[in-house]
Amino acid sequence: MNDLFSKFDALIAQREALLSTGITDPFSLVMEEVKSPTVAVCNGRETILLGTYNYMGMTFDPDVIAAGKDALENFGAGTTGSRVLNGTFQGHKECEEALKEFYGMDHAMVFSTGYQANLGIISTIAGKGDYIILDIDSHASIYDGCAMGNAEIVAFRHNDVEALEKRLKRLPADAGKLVVLEGVYSMLGDVAPLKEMIRISKEHGAMVLVDEAHSMGFIGENGRGVAEEQRVMDDVDFIIGTFSKSVGTVGGFCVSNHPKFEVMRLVCRPYVFTASLPPSVVATSATSIRKLMHNGNKRAHLWENSKTLHKGLRDLGFKLGTETPQSAIIAVIMPDLERGAMMWEALLHEGLYVNLARPPATPAGMTLLRCSLCAEHSSEQVSEILGMFEAAGKKIGII
Ligand code: PMP
Image 1 (cartoon, rainbow, N blue to C red):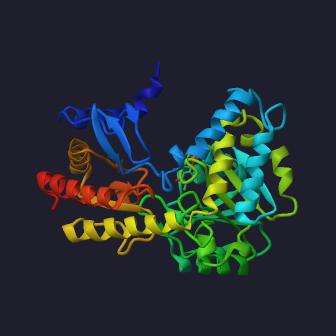
Image 2: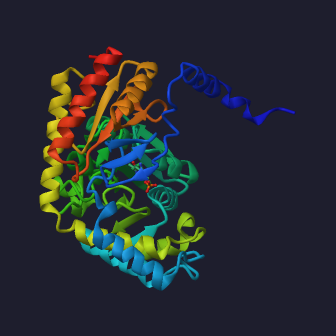
Image 3: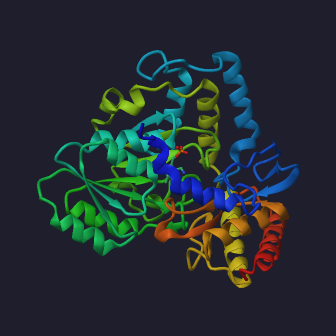
């Protein structure tokens, strides 16, 4: 028998070598108790959370929790069905109404996760003979959406406007084209030059999809994302997003003004062939989305946190993913995986949780400690976080 698992041998060996040094496994941490959007108990110790994408801290919002309890009481624990059969409850429609209002768009479609939203929309709208032109650092769900469909895939250098133009120029003028971009790229926390990229895409007759997973609720005057900030909302054909970050729940969506968008509900397999979100989840999500529309003060505080952490880490001598803070993600670049894992563990011992990110999820083979700030982090917590980075960085010898 040919053991189908032999293809994982190198990964298993690398993991065993790392764990044999006695290091805590960075990928199996348990949140034993969650006290607030910014504090949990891990390994029996109170820990500040700086790697959760809980940007607006909505997970413990009293109105959000009340809406979830009410839906659980009145609509039950689950829908036990697809959206196109018995799985569309009042709450799903309300959630889609909240999204249409939030984005000022005609159509909204809720999926069970953001991953499925990308998988479904990308694989369905770009078919045989069409082209998908995407940034090489795109999220796994975008790549998987491409792999599931039948379109030709063309990647261009990360955030490089000229590279995008070159690729578009080479494609047949009359072919269907979908340019896929992200507002904020989650590994380094950098923002895309959407204005230029969208202008060029339109000049070449392409439709544009923007994944705003990491900007919703935070970037742009109304929190609609980078497309709003760069004043190109009207030129974006599809916005993909998730409830698992600023909204603070779970789920995904696509909003669009395309007049034929509703046909997606019949042809998009990751929408049709899976159960819909539970009533409590759509209720908490709709309440959270509506509250995010009026969150100007929280957004300002989150920017303050992001700027303070970026400057503080740079002043300490850490190498960061961006020259200036561009989003609520700040990536600290580690010299290698071993020291990255040691630093991650040292921070955990200090009482701080960040994300350890490593290849293949990261660009250019980098090991990163990814920090994502929350509007509920107090200024005192941000100071404390900087103190923890200083202590851990000196202990490991990175600074
Ligand atoms: N798109 C991007 C850019 C993401 O970072 C993520 C999640 N990290 C997703 C989509 C998927 O979202 P979800 O967690 O809802 O599946």
